[in-house]
Amino acid sequence: MYTYHSYVGGRQVESEEWVYVLDADCLLEDVFSSLTLKRKLEKGRISPDDRSAAVVGRVAKADSDTVEMAVDAASQATVAWSTFPLETRIEELGRLLRTRIMERAEEIVAVLVLEGHPLALAQWQVSGMLEVFSPETLGFYKSQMCQEFQSGARRLLVRRQPDGVVCLNPPQNAPLSSALLGVASVMGGNGLVVRAPRSAPLGVMYAMQEIVAPALEEIGAPAGVLNVVCGNPAPMLNSWLRHPAVDDIFYFGSSEGGLKFEARCVAERKKPILELAGNDTVTVWKDADVGLVAEALTESFYGSGQLCMVPNQVLVHPDVFEPLLESLLREVGRIRPGHPWEPDVLLTPVLRNEKFFRCLEDARAKGAEVACGGHAIRLDGTPDPTGIFLEPTVVIVRGLDRARQVDAVRHETFFPLLPLVVGDQAADAELLDSFIGFVNSNEYGLRNSLWAQDPDVIERFTARTTTGGLLKVNDSHIGFLPYLPTHGGTGLTGGSFGEANYPILRTSHIQGVSISPGSRPRNAVFGAWQELVNQRP
Figure 1 (cartoon, rainbow, N blue to C red):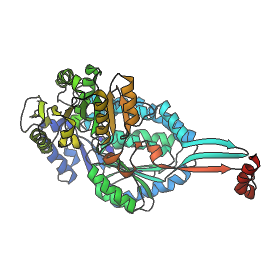
Figure 2: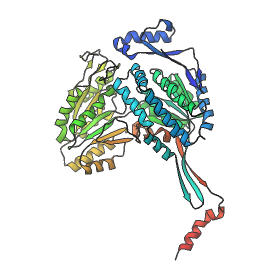
Figure 3: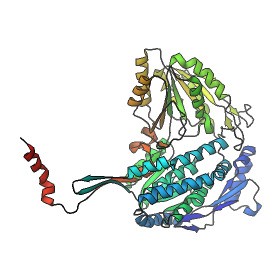
Figure 4: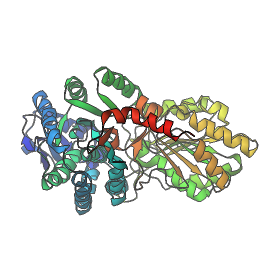
């Protein structure tokens, strides 16, 4: 059984309370009994010695004093850590993290599967972590952190300085990978405090204590640069907001809750870095390769749609709609539920599905057609109103004018529900403009995709699409790439300060520096004007 205490200031901090982690596979067999066991363990009604094979780990629950200690430790460590050279903080640390992730890749995957991530998606997450610390991406980070110029005798620097103490509250659906992404803020010279979510604390604790902490120790980073605690979200967020040493807070969650939290951060003079809902759009032009498009669109159903970065709606040129639908329905037939350790399983349980059915009923009431799916199903795929899985569901909405009236188009659904919005018959130039306008009018803005072959269409679309943190053309919607961000966006996705999220950049600020061997101040102030006068004919 995995066991982790709080990690504060480079040491283990024990607690009398524990959060127990159950093998997600057991939840599929008997949800009620498994959750009852978890509650009894955490309330001390039964001894851990009497645990069943379903219990795979436990994580200490931090008290309020430990949470405060974590911030204090990060604040103290940042003073020295921010003076470490970029080569150490970015290149050396990044190489070590990448090496350790590669060495422990199979174990990371195993931990993710224990927490309920399907095997294929666990492997996808690990590959994404490797791109975050790839040589190309590390080189980009370093190039952005400091640039040097010469102006006469002066040496000029445009550099980014760390904000200070960064607190990260990862989401329940992808806590391990989100926590590792946040480690990039440490490369900027910040101290980091990570909350391991109570619902899935094991992966975060494993990654931070088994991979990141040893790497920091190896390069001689001060104790306290990294701190990890597990606890309830509301009290911990409140503590971070109150603490004078906290500078930045990463918040993952719903748009409604995130925007309220943003206002609280601003009121407390903290920088909010928001990762909220997605509602991504994929645009399919008439010359697109429908086979590849259909394959990409099935990403909408990965993790039962409970990933913020999957496709949420599709704009389709009417000329290609029928062949695309036919190809998509074939691909959807391959998406099935199952145990997380099965290699071809991509659906995950949805324990509360009433919102899915309300959303589907809303679409039907507003004229949408259900092309496939629409039912709860059992582990074996058979329909059952009490099933804990949902069928991949495709609905057809005809016409852009009525599309935004449909809740499944206007808002992120977080379910395996994909609307295909068929464009109106019109001249191609007019239709392309309406597609671009539709994408830009999306209240959210995480990722957008385009599938087209015409270079003019690609150029016009990419030049005029202004929303979103990432735009991909003829490619996987969720695949990771070097240099490019994995998260971040505009509108209801990123809040008032939303943009592509490079944590090392989001948790630092630009500073200009001039170093002169000794300039005459009066000449520095008035000399430029005199030179201008002298140059006149």
